Image (cartoon, rainbow, N blue to C red):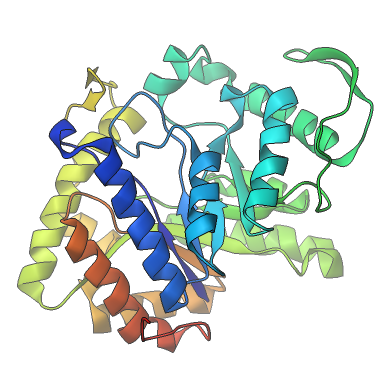
Length: 346
């Protein structure tokens, strides 16, 4: 089982500065590369200070210029917000500039606030995503592509430059619903998923759906991988764990506002709402714990057959504390699961 650091931007204070936020994220990527993490991941979100990253492919090329080996995964890019005729070319260029380290995670979008303000109603995101994905795959794999669909109608065209890798970039599908995971796996996609703060049964159902789809593909699907995203942080003791859980509890008050809540955003700032999940319940579902507890929880993930865990370590803590967590996880936890870990930083 391998590990990725999610470079999600948490920006509750505008006075901190977007330049400092992204430098913090770049510092995390550089450290993760040196410590042997398998990947770093970048999410796409617009018009808000929670998970703020409107240009993931641009950031991917910046990371590539400052790292040597770590994979750079989008987690995710939101296809319905883009025109595939131009976005396909951007993907090819990003794949070239990242020297083949780009893992393209794609999805339909989850936050009603940003989707609808950008002209994509939530009740249309699935069908728009499905057609966008078909168009994207066609443009990345063929020349002289024409289209006559609901959202795309165009005469034959060929994106340039042509992909240097088959398909343009390795593609991963972001999906939470177990039945959706099964069908996407059956189509030959790598899977990114998360139970968020859901219970363990949801996670088991998600893994079972992936394994069922992969099993039905036989040898053709043996290369497919399952990646799980979790909010995580290493704590040296129970007092520190409680403090970090309280920070995560406050973060979810903002996250849930735009994910499942009313979407109250004032001048780009997501209003924190009362979190309906208790701190105790969050402590059960999230990976915020001591080293020994972390190893035990991840052990159950390894037994389920999860291939990669994305650790979201950005939820309101100080920048140095997050770097210390990345270091501690690599030194004390990763050696139990990964063969890539490097516990010294040059």
